[in-house]
Amino acid sequence: AQTVTQSQPEMSVQEAETVTLSCTYDTSESNYYLFWYKQPPSRQMILVIRQEAYKQQNATENRFSVNFQKAAKSFSLKISDSQLGDTAMYFCAFMNNYQLIWGAGTKLIIKP
Amino acid sequence: SAVISQKPSRDICQRGTSLTIQCQVDSQVTMMFWYRQQPGQSLTLIATANQGSEATYESGFVIDKFPISRPNLTFSTLTVSNMSPEDSSIYLCSVDTRGDNEQFFGPGTRLTVL
Image (cartoon, rainbow over the protein chains, first blue to last red):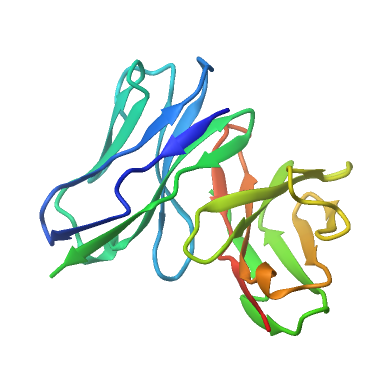
């Protein structure tokens, strides 16, 4: 069975610092997609970044970037120059055959 | 992406009653998904709703409890039937607008059952 593990239930950093959220997954598939979603207190689930497994290059979206290590089945999210608006739950998700498998989430708090 | 709306945004219901949640998308999409997010938990897929076919339910979810309609390519409803306090959750719909495995979510419906 495919599983996604986020080992950090909660993290807290000062504004403007860089923070890395960890995610590991388990699958026997070779073609799949990985995502990071953000859920602020408003509960809206927002797609932050995606990575296709067949791409070696790590995805980046402005201040957000990933470190994708396929052999290690690791998919961490780095947030640079963190902002107060980054405070949210962050979920790592794995997709194969249109079904998303979710991690338990990491609560990220950005302190002023 | 797509603009997705859900109604109601929240509701408080009595046990034994039913609530129908609506999901409206501003573009035509083939695949729509319904998720449940229990308090402090991650998301669990309830079912996949494709227009023109019966919804496909995940293990642990049945049509009698969570009937789904998908009358056209922009709209779907999820009904939570015969509710109990254990059904208190956020219910979210999502869509894959481009068929590229990227799902976008509605704002969610917060349901509290007393």
